[in-house]
Length: 466
Image (cartoon, rainbow, N blue to C red):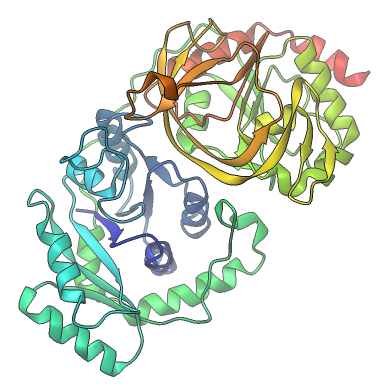
């Protein structure tokens, strides 16, 4: 069947509950696949840490409803159990049309996949009012199905008695009761949770969550809800380009660059790429004979000193981009290609220097979905193509591109005066703050690889030796 773990609002403990459920299932050696609603990068890292299997994002704005069904079905066929973590509150999300389920909401995913919902309620400041919340959420949209509730942050036996008494007339299953946990905490910073690679004590925390799950959940009722249905694989229909194989793509992945959708990496490999992971932080030289760069997002501002001091790698990246190696950079990757990063302490750190601008840390978070129209032909996208992406960053640029790649507006907005120019493009270089999921646009990785296959890897090796 599979269920979606949703919440009444952000901060209710949805991620902690989800990790606890996954940890218990993994501890008992069940084969489980996890999913995350929305454009999140960091929560899926925690899922993967627990399950040892890539988490998959389900986002109808970045992809499409058919792609979500295809992705979900494909990745649940070889697993016994599956679990989807929602985003924000159940009905929260972006909607271009009011009076409908928000198009980016957990509720909309539940409707697309026709799955029941387990609602997590933060009970820390509730007693009798919990019934009004539960009643409202479970009856607001009659098309949604609810499997039950998980009561989180319950303070005492007396508190639990009041909650159960209030909920009893609603006849809703209580599938879990989680007491207030002062010693279990997932650390956060300016863009959400601290990523897994920076948490040396994370395994200890997962052990705590495993024990918590054993005591707090009604597994007799929950376990059947997580069971997957075998309907047969839905294959992704991809037309492989004619390439001189293999095409070696250097993917920057370390503590500074970790924001990648697994589906994007999978697409590159299915289309003929050989992915070579390397670290701009720690490696002293680039991988050999590469034909393309992929710089994802992350936290280069927090590792700016170390990135800046890795002179040999910065020079090698600059040299290769200067002679035309195809390069795709998003957000943190864009920042790395700038002349400098100016960190939170207003310190200046020289970077690769390909882009004639500096990245500095602003005071406001830029967050949201965007519709982007391509203003000029690029090696990735033809002019006038419309795509949808997501931005999530605190940094800004001292100088915007004089010939921007995109004309963008907030998703769902129709006011032309709200459009902005964004993104940099040079020969074989695509750099932007816009995060893209390629699941519904396989032509993007296809064109990328076609261009990469034409780059002379022997020339690449010669430049690296200099």
